[in-house]
Amino acid sequence: MSPTPTNATGVRHPYRWVVLLLSWAAFTMTAVDRSTWGPASVSVGEHLGVSLAGLGVFATGYYIGYVISNAAGGVLTDWLGGRVVISSTLFVAGGFMILFGETTSVAVGIAFQACVGVFAGCDYSAGVKLISQWFPEQDRGFAMGIFMTATSLGTVIANAIVPSLIEVSSWRTSYHVFGIASMVVAVLCFFLVRNGTETTAGPARELPKLGPLVRNRDLFLLGLAGFGGLWGTYGFITWSNALMIKGNHISPVQAGAVVAIFGIAAVVAKPLIGVISDVFGGKRKVLTVVVLGAFVATLLLFGTANSLTAFLWIAPFLGIAAYVYSPLMVALIPNLSGVRLAGSAAGATNAFWQLGSTIVPVVLGVVFQATGSFFLAFATLAAGPLLGMLLMLAVREHGAPQAVPNAGDTAKAVA
Image (cartoon, rainbow, N blue to C red; front, side, top):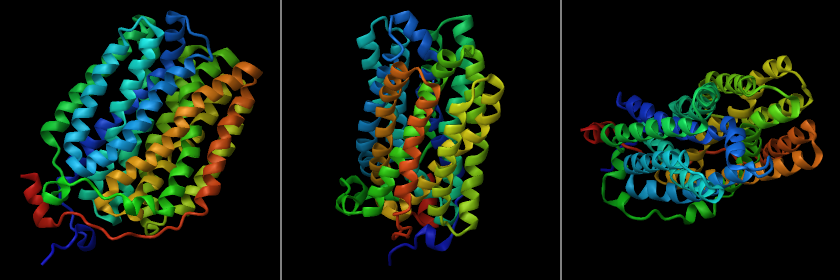
């Protein structure tokens, strides 16, 4: 007799919290690594002699690597298991952070940023896979909400710490510190994380069959919608510091405070939106559409501001809108794909999402340098979530057959 899936019985193993904590910690570190560029970019550009528009190339180099690793990392996760993928790739990403802190060449610096992205992109799909295995569907909105606080918390940490590190030391120090921290978290994941039994038995060692994903219309639309959302979110993270400094003459520390508040609001809101979606029976499409619409409005409002006080008032509302669509979208993925292919589906959709992150830094740099308009820069950002909102209207929200470890097998997995 085949085992009864955990999702069907509602059995909850206590070890799931260890899995969630370490998956979140790994994802937080790669988010910190990614967000370090925003507050450090002006200093790096001055040190290496890079123009304002040229700074976007560094971020694009990172996101090119990140897109590649998301597409491949999801397949590796379904094949090898989340534990191996999340620990090994985070460790190497930390190493390249340290190397970037030593660079004196623009070309080598861009290459190192791309390498950080290549290895940092795998822990997202590995985390989604592990959480999908250990948390039943009825609890997954809250779990994914906690997991996805990592992206906004990374922004908070980087913007709270990096400007001060630059003032007392240099931009290099921030890359060294966060690189070492990433490697420490990777070691903890290697020794403490366990896969669900689905990835410890024979079938999990076979390459996943991706045909059902390729033919899944709703996953494709979700991928394109996330492209629009992340166009706005990571365009803001990458450029907001420099835009406020150059466009409104805000000091680097003040700009960092604005973006830190932006991220703090999202840290609080993400688990809350997950709970709300769970309470409403896991219906997440309508909530996603509403949030993306609010994101468009707050970006345009931020673009009309011209003082530190206005930025500080708008930042928390913008932070909520810029981030809380992501746990809703991520929680939809296992429902649309099934847990067996959750890693591959998460990696594939996030690869689409991150294309927005890859393109927007260069586009926004060109727009601002050509027009000098703070508002037009933010209107360019707002076009992304507007597209995402329209595409989400066409997504059909439905469940997929689940395949996760049962209560007895999870105990074996922990052992």
